[in-house]
Image (cartoon, rainbow, N blue to C red; front, side, top):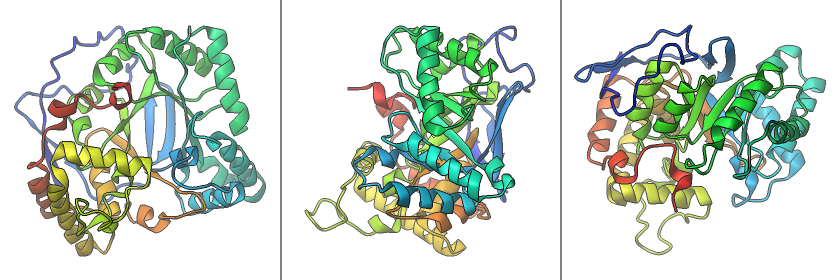
Length: 385
């Protein structure tokens, strides 16, 4: 079965010249302004490959997001966290998304990967991937500075080469991000990094980066059933270049779950508390999109779909995003040692959303506001006041 999505021709940026684009081995798929792009859904493999030319990395399509080690979600015990990481990996959820600023995330990965080396067979070790982020301050991006920063992550994670380095930059008016990415590409050529990627870059800057011949394999952006902005300008550029999307916020910090079904947050203490940074952030997204009443209609629709397939609302929410154009993987936050959702995550892979499911969801979402018009392009959330 196919999910059909209206596409708009990508016209606002000048084309990437064939002599400049690093995607010499990829087939381009230009989009017609009046066409409807049909994305084949159904049974998907557990893993996928993000690639650019000779650079490639196999990842699990549901990633373990480790931002919750940075504080605000509860105290993390080191030993409990590492044991939880082992359980996720043993269950087949073998890709971990972390960052230099997620508290002890890189250190936890280093402890974890050494336990895997000692206690698991080589085939398990081969499947495990650690995707980290580098979020530097706005200083001059010299080769030495970039190299030293990346060496810190390699040491903390105890790996000879980072599987993926996802780069973030705060200020687009400072074009030092191009210098940093060129130095990261040099480190990739030296074998210190296997693949170079982005996190929270908008479409315009992704286009500029690709024009400069930098071999980006993916861009990490916010994407959920409520926030479909990546399926507009960003996905159209990704179609043309082969760059993939890795998404976060897919279950909106837990808002897209049975916990918030049939609740009224306008009444004090009547519903679950919004007691984490993620819940507070995504509640603001709900307000911008259409409000709590429309969100309740969406949750009720998702619950009907979930019951039909014998799964949970978060499982449906993740699958819906994974079925979208250019999405390679979706992160689900892990509260290591505090809570687990291994079963819900693994239920994503065999789930097939049929045409009735998709139509029922879209009947609700089309009633919400166009967030691209309301708040701007995806990949720019953290650059606004």
